Length: 134
Image (cartoon, rainbow, N blue to C red; front, top):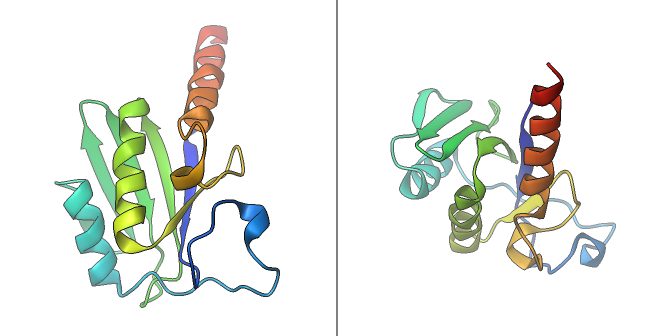
């Protein structure tokens, strides 16, 4: 169980998913090596022993970076289990690389959202409810 964020790159920055034209296809994020370097810059110590699956652990939580085997990488899914402090580095990574972070729970682009932590907070509430029922 995780909060999931899809990382994509488009021909231009968009403020909302609704602004993306139907005929717009995502562009490659870059080579796997480039993506590894970009992620590691913002999430130091990310373990890329499996080139398709990076793991970041920190005191405020973890992220699994599902990059896949394509090179160049076409997209990346983040499986987040962390506190709200993790959101700012995700946004900074995307802004620096020209990528978009799509919150799979709210449908918002994190870098343009009024409240980029909303989806993560929803996941926290769901997780706490499920754990409380166990």
